[in-house]
Image (cartoon, rainbow, N blue to C red; front, side, top):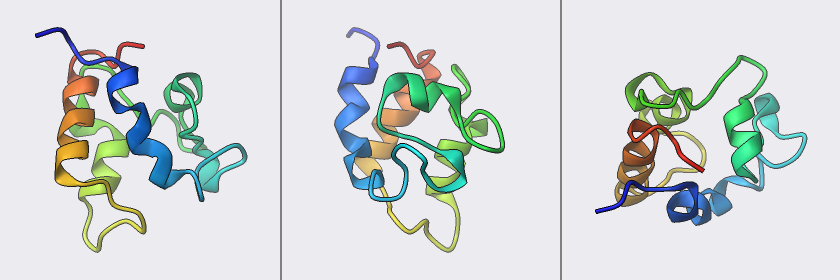
Length: 88
């Protein structure tokens, strides 16, 4: 099939926006493609083509769990999107 685009994963970030919208915690704003790709206070959160080393994915796989957890299915689709180069 076609590679995933931001459109296919955008809705998953809705659950994150109570903390990570404009002016969000750790400088992370997950409200748009541009703001996601811009990263946070510590740098990039999405490394296109490298989901394993993308902090967005790492935070979701940490123990104890992040405050807001994506479902396994959502995280899997985000991983596929990042590994496809995180296309808009």
